[in-house]
Amino acid sequence: MNAPFKSQAEGVLEVAGLAYAYDGSLAVRDVSLHVGPGEIVALLGANGAGKTTTVKMIAGVLKAQKGAIRFGSHALSGMASHAVVRRGVTLVPEGRLVFPQMTVLDNLRMGASTQSDKARIGELLDEMWVTFPRLAERRNQLAGLMSGGEQQMLAIARGLMAQPRLLILDEPSLGLMPSAVQEMFALIHRLHLRGLGVLLVEQNLKQALRISHRGYVLEKGVTVLEGTGRDLLDNAFVQRAFLGH
Ligand SMILES: Nc1ncnc2c1ncn2[C@@H]1O[C@H](COP(=O)(O)OP(=O)(O)OP(=O)(O)O)[C@@H](O)[C@H]1O
Ligand SMILES: [Mg+2]
Image 1 (tube, protein in one colour):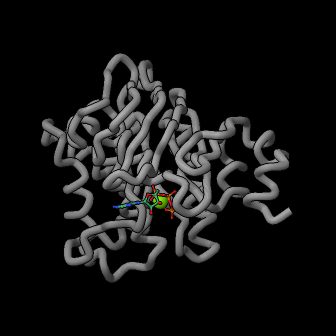
Image 2: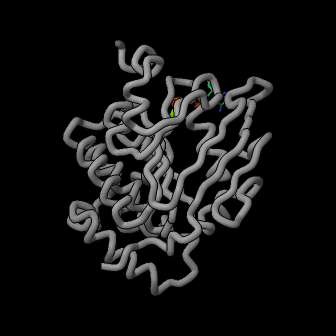
């Protein structure tokens, strides 16, 4: 099967010194991180640490007020979200925002709206049916009638329809049953094996670090720690702040 992703030769995300304030109140002060091609990188932090604000800036949903964002040879800073998608970076937002009154198939078609080659859309759909057999069975069902786990899979599949080289997932395991969480982490690992880079925002720190090559910890809008999954799990600050040790 063809991987549904573009060549990964240039797929390095580099973020330096990002800042963002909502109405004068600083949510992100100084965030720097990078994600290599095909790498799984976790972005961790407590409620309100600035994770969602950070990934929205990377995806062009919010305009960074300071700092720089590059993906391969392109500066993403200041680009609109559809232009960021065209450069190969797709965000699957917090809260699995599928269109509940639309079918699974139509939700997936929406994900390909930046795709100019219409014949390619059919090929991508075929690839999604292979990757997500459960969605194939339900292709004509309304998305809103599916389980939380299935809706999350649909949200991810819709993101993949844009053929990203880097997929950003904002808390994909939130509110899912344990079996669906396992399935979701297994899927992320499979996507990585096919060459896709993943920036994974998670509160489920142990599981996230188990499948991640590296991770960053955000505290009050600042990236305060970076390390391999093992380093971060063993780190005294991480254990105190997140693991209740
Ligand atoms: N639309 C908004 N307007 C005003 N303040 C906001 C808005 N969105 C987020 N904030 C504030 O910005 C800070 C960072 O929020 P953000 O959603 O980025 O954090 P987070 O790490 O994603 O948290 P969570 O784990 O709860 O999803 C918080 O103090 C939050 O209250
Ligand atoms: Mg968030």
